[in-house]
Image 1 (cartoon, rainbow, N blue to C red):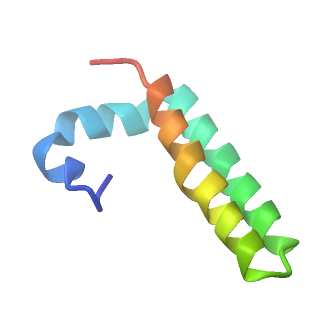
Image 2 (cartoon, rainbow, N blue to C red):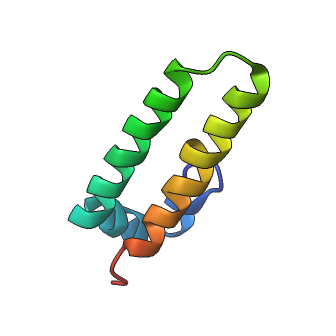
Length: 69
């Protein structure tokens, strides 16, 4: 969210989304899955898969769980 500039333009919505309990749980699970995935990779392709799946797509899906303010 900081990379795309959302924290500057939509600070209230970003803070509300990140404070939402289901979003926090979802993000924690994605972080765990990213770490587990990365721990068993052996090729650069597998690293890229882990980052794409659990570093980008997963957290993005978590933000869809957030309740709209």
